[in-house]
Length: 153
Image 1 (cartoon, rainbow, N blue to C red):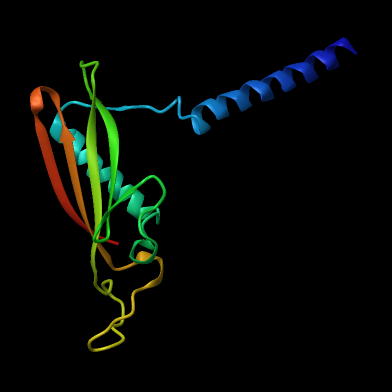
Image 2 (cartoon, rainbow, N blue to C red):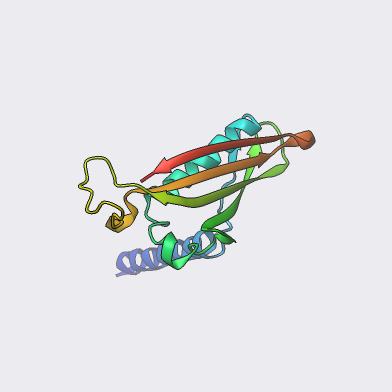
């Protein structure tokens, strides 16, 4: 009987600790990791890669109608901005990378049938949207790096 009660108590304690870990890391963002790069240029490229992952995940599929997703700030003219913190290797100070995603147009995806001469209806799921991605990373001693990319979904 003692063995069973010890096992039940250990499972309950593990659930409580797991719940606390989840609350601290997900809800309060205390477990948020800061990415580490070797240069400011690499951090700017990392910002573009982050933006592409966000677009691929479908976060910006309805950008033409609903504006910016949660956590992104509208810059107007179909642009959304967010800041990411990063750190350079062997430097304790944290820096900021500003990422801007702008919806710049629509083109029928390759292989899709064009449905009209002057007007082609956008595909569901953001397919064919053309995005401009600008990543600006600030670094030590006033250094800056800017990377621009165009992405078509």
